[in-house]
Image (cartoon, rainbow, N blue to C red; front, side, top):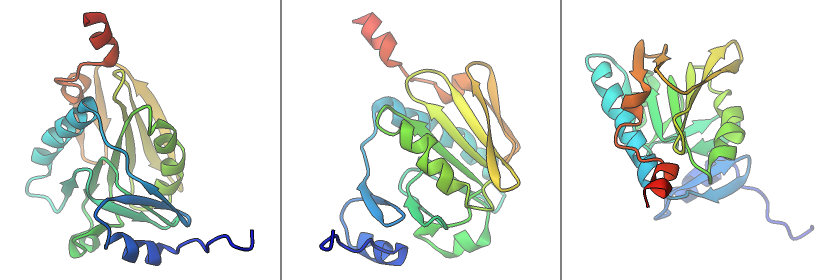
Length: 191
């Protein structure tokens, strides 16, 4: 126990990660490597960005895919699958976003527990965050956590029809979110 390394502070982690060739996430002193994404995961992210981006034209809002770092007051540093921010303070920082309005994570077997647990706890500490959306990559299911005071309250799952992103004033059909996605069970049945 006496030889345990001292946990990193958020500032130490951010300085260290800036020098690394790979991406890492940070939670309260612990560092973890980023996992790769499946074809379906990537397709879902591309579909949602293709829908959201045109809705943000002529607004101060910006949408970013997987490579944009979000720092929370937890302390934590994460790379959500999709980040939407409308805050001028985020426009001033080209590498880190601290005031997102909407965060989206695509659930996979490797990340579902973290996305629905640790990340939900961390993201709740962002006062500007209005919605946290979880999209399952294995079956058509979407959960939305909406800001209600200090917490994000869950609605869903939505398994058909459409979802409403109130933070953006946008309704999205699940068929558009899952366009060109072939779920694992369909692949197995087809082989």
